[in-house]
Figure 1 (cartoon, rainbow, N blue to C red):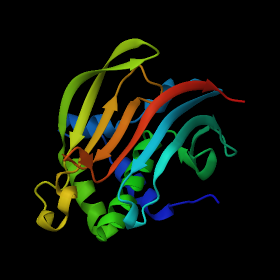
Figure 2: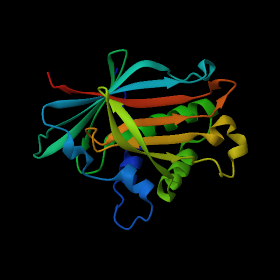
Figure 3: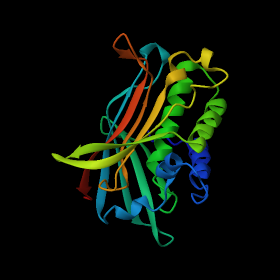
Length: 223
């Protein structure tokens, strides 16, 4: 069964389409910059490993062996479009087309997945959580240089981190999620611009209540 999430995808599409010019914060610029799909070669597939861990008693759909793929193809209406596919144990769960000029759709897909997971675990309103996330992404996060390793080569990258609920008025009701960290790692050396997407609650006694990652894996030929 292919699962689609049109409402939240639309919400983050609108957020992603906000003008980049005029934003003062470099963290927001880095996450929502446009044109990042231009360096994905034609006839190639950008792949990511996808993992989602959380409490089993929450009913959360856990993902141990997931994957995400992104391709840029010719659209039926002319021009190009980005096709994002999400799989769990090889089974296709989501296939969605996106415009190529609105930034990297993996940002939307990851935020959508994280929000649904948090709402499932906490029982919180997805509308309230969505608005807090939007405010946090607009107000900016912490930016620091880092490196990534791809194919045995070390490459420069930039890490952007947000803690959207740290100062929220309802943080006391959110448990471990009050200190959740959203992390993005971007690099010009990665097709599509993103090496890592991560959402995680803090480690307590060696365990994290919730952790989800999409990590760049490879650039493959289309079949």
